[in-house]
Length: 299
Image (cartoon, rainbow, N blue to C red; front, top):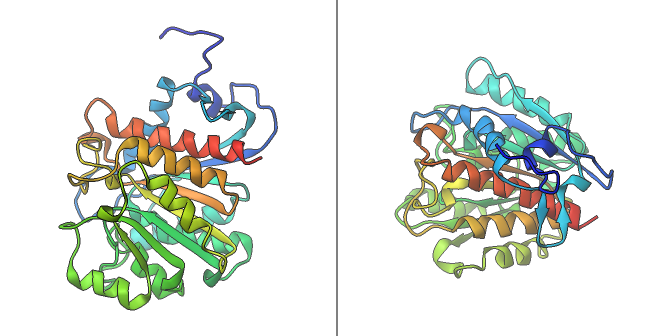
C-alpha cells in the first residue's frame, strides 16, 4: 500500500504511531460480544472496523485532526462463559475507563453492561445517566431468556434507568411490534420514528435532544449500525430499507463527540461475514473517527 508522509493514516494514529499533540485523549475498546437473536459473527466486528481505518486519513473538514488526541486502544476484551458472565466482564472493563470512549461491538447486548459500567466509573446512579439510541429497533424484548442483543434497553429499565432518560431515534416501521412499542410508551421513553427525521437532519435532531437533557449528568449514545438503510449496511442482519445514510450516522457521531456531556458511544451489530466490500465496516470506522473529530473540536 502506498505511503505518503503528508497523508497520515487513521490506522497509524490508533496504533500510536502518529505524533500525539496531547490536546485530549480517547479510549477505544473492542467488545466482541456475540449472543445475537440471529446467529452470526458480531465478535469479528472490532477487528474489521480497526482494519478499515487503513483507508482513512486523520483529518476532518470540520477543522479537526484526530492526531491531536492521544488514543488509548485497549484492544479487544477476552470474553468467556455465557451472556451473563460476559456482561459482568464488560461492565468491569468499562468501570476502568476514565476518558471519553468508543466501544467497538459486538452485538447490541453490550449496551446494558456498558451503561452500568459508565455510571459506576463516575460514581453516579443510573438516574443521572441519559441514553440515546440510534437504532431501527426498540431492544425491549423480554428478559426471561437472559441478556441478548434484543433486550439491553429492557434490562437497563429493570436495573433502574428511568425510561424518561431514554431517547430512541430512527425506530423503523415493520421492524418492531405493538407490544414493545407499548412498553416504550408505558416507560416514558421518547421515541422518534425514522419517518419523523428528515433526510440529512439526524445530527440536528440529536443535537436538539442533547440540549434538552438537563436532568442527567452524562449521556451514553448507542449507535446500532442497522439504523442505516440496508443498501449501506449489508453487514447488519437487522437493517431494513428506508434507514439512514452513512453520512447521517457520521454527522451524528461528530455532533456526539462535540458535546462534552456525551462520555461514551458504542458501534454495534456489524457481522463482517455478511458484509460486502467492507461497506458496513467502513461506515463504522467513519463513525468512530467522526466522534473522535468531534471530541477534538470541543477541546
